[in-house]
Length: 178
Image (cartoon, rainbow, N blue to C red):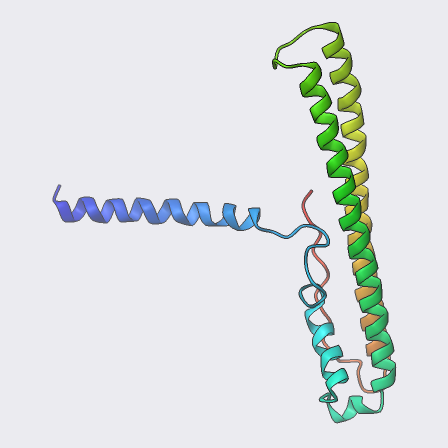
């Protein structure tokens, strides 16, 4: 086998490994609930709202500018409230989970410690951690339901305006894999 063939083989193997690794890395960088901005969450709605605020909306929308601004404000306010709620819940619950894990680590310094106190502590804390994780999951689901309901209501209001039944809406909000 020549040096050239070996190099081509190495390049092919490297390219294959990179193509398999990149999707895994991309999945790790997926934003969690509440981490996207208003513009990232509602790209088309935010553009419409920005154009109405700037006064650059189309002629057919000028007469509805006041109603669109009210709908935009409602969407923005509801998004900010949902985002604040889920971020606060995640921060609080994650801190409590970390504290419960620290209690287990303190009571069971070695991984296979079978002392009665260790077993009791681990059992109690694992139940508490499971309950906290369930609360965190509930908060995330509530966030996504709220954000999606607000998106649907906003676009329903826009499409109800005369001549706007064809308006392109934002895509449904994808739910984070928890």
